[in-house]
Image (cartoon, rainbow, N blue to C red; front, side):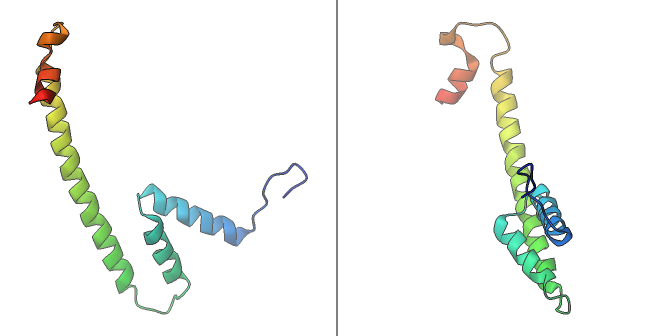
Length: 99
């Protein structure tokens, strides 16, 4: 730590932290990040396992997008079922959720 009690990192650690940050910004799991970091330490090996990891991650993202689109559609239907100021008894959203 510095005299101001800040953490002090060397260049290699900063690069590693930036790599982790980049992976996490792509919504990669900690296990995926660990796998990628382990692969970086073996630069002469085939990168086929990395390609497989990314293909699986992409597949997972596509599935999540489809799930989110279904959710979006449901929420839009709910929102349109009560587009007026009604009483709670007649609230289309609550009725939608009750069925």
